Image (cartoon, rainbow, N blue to C red; front, side, top):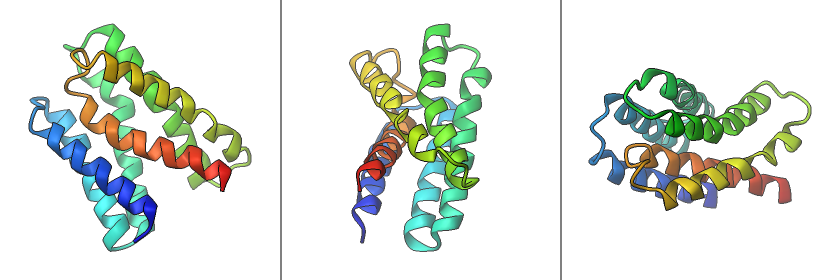
Length: 146
């Protein structure tokens, strides 16, 4: 098993542990789609898993707009967190030039995750899916160096 698969599975375990704290159906849906995507990529086919993970990215992209009771500040930070991951996914799947340069933007997602971890009381429902996206951001950033 590759180290990438182990990192993703670890992210899923942490996300599922946060799943039991979540009361929001959209958060539960995002974590379940992420978990299914990673299990598909490890056990069945990487392409199917990667496209399913793209669905989780799209769900998270629209999460700030669909969650009405969340404060504007949390919506803003989630949007800043997910946009670099979305662009990296789109550049990778469409084979667009400049995908390497876009991967440097993963630093933004990592910094926002650290901010969310420090202020974990504000992000108590969102930390579950943010852990898995953090693992993805770290792997995209590490892909630049090997």
